[in-house]
Length: 232
Image (cartoon, rainbow, N blue to C red):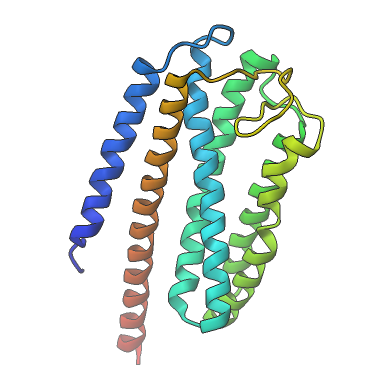
């Protein structure tokens, strides 16, 4: 097994420190929102994990396009690695959103356009994993997966724009929106700084996780090739 590269260790340390700083800022630096109270603080993690999930799918889209052009298996590994990470963090987004929704909307779940589209997006990429598991031939699996990742990405802008195009009770965090949306609030400068640090921290965390997942995938491929050699 190859040692972890020094550059990856640096990214790991940076991710740990930044997430720690962001967490401390959320609970000590950012003020308590006047209307929602302490539950509003989950917003910093909720939006950051949503950003990380969508970023994962964007990276998967780029990897899928590159794979179809170059036919290099490495990009198929990047694609599936990014989608796995995206699935996990979008699930965290849904859970933290439900915790936020309970005191704001007096319900854990409602079929609001944003909640509906994010559910569709999560199911689209869960189906991607099922598609891959049902195809044995590696080249065919990679080709079908790449096409699916490109088409499936349509669910990402649909989710992002849903609260801008449709009537919704979900607040718009970035950009203009309905100020009367339930749970909507205006960020103070302290909140804005904390929000920015959270986004940066989770972006670095994504780089660390993706890098590690790719290395694990490469190790698994080496193990598989060794098994095949021993069987011959």
